[in-house]
Structure formats: C-alpha cells, structure tokens
Image (cartoon, rainbow, N blue to C red; front, side, top):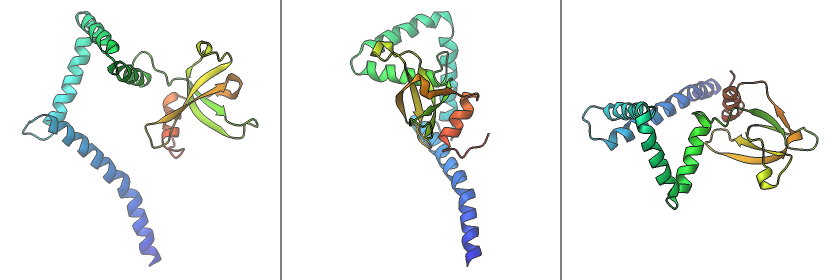
Amino acid sequence: MRKIGQYFVGGLLFLAPVVITVYVVFLLFTTIDGIFSFELPGAGFLFTVGLITFVGFVTSHLLAHRLLLLVDRLFSRLPLVALLYASLKDLVNAFVGDKKSFNKPVEVALDADHKIRALGFITRDDLQSLGLTDSVAVYLPQSYNFAGNLVIVERSRVTPLAASPSEVMKLIVSGGVSAK
C-alpha cells in the first residue's frame, strides 16, 4: 500500500505542473479566440499576435511617434484613467523596454544582525524628494505571485549581487526552488 502512495505522489508531482500549464495555455487561447469570431481554433490568437507585432512596427517609425504622443497625453490627462494608465505603463516598462527597473539585484538585511535577508531589486537610488536622504527603494517580489512589496531601507543594509537580474527574479518567483 505504501508503494501505491509513492506512485501516486510521483504521478501527481509530474502531472500537476504539466496539466496546469496546458490548462492555462488553453484558457489563454480560448479567451483570445472568444474575442474574435474566427471559425479556425487558434486564429484569434494568431491574429492578436500579428496585430501586436504590427502595432509595434508602426509605432517604431517616426510617423506614428506623434500619434503615440497624442494618445499618451490624452490618457495622462483623463481623471482615473491617468492613474491606471501611468501605473500600467510604468509596470510594463519596468520589465521590458528602455527603462527596465529590475536590473539592480540586491540582498537586503531585514534585521540589525544581518541574519534575516531578502532578495530584491533597487528601483530608486535617490529618495531625497521624499525627505529620505540615505535610503533607497527596494522592490521585493513575492514567490508564486505577481505581487511584491516596496521597502525603504538604509543604503548600508543593501548589498549588490553579482548575479543576473533574470537569475535572481527566477529564484525569488520560484520560492528559492528553481536552480539555474
């Protein structure tokens, strides 16, 4: 009976990530396909990828630059929309684009003895505008979640890491389980 339990757990450990990944991809495809009324399954997804690529091509040329600035100004001036738009724009730019914010991985000492530490990313080096002269803003992503906490710590409690930002993010998001 014990062997059967071990086989069950082994099967569960193998199947759970596979089934959940397939299910999430299936939901993504069917949701995007549901937006459009194409007969061929996956055509809506391909259309969406093509549309995004086309918009990227158009916006990278000078003619579309003015249109981009116009849309940016419009969304930045609308009440409520401005807050959402600016937050989403900054979040997307933090991960991709020219203004990547998660490119300075650090270790932060959370206690005076430096025995409890967390991994994160410096997002702002200078907080003088808030009256915090010798502090930095460090974002601490959460494991298995698309969330995190912003902590303000003394510069002396922050140690830069000699690791790639993607390696550190992978380690944090996986809860410390992921190996290279």
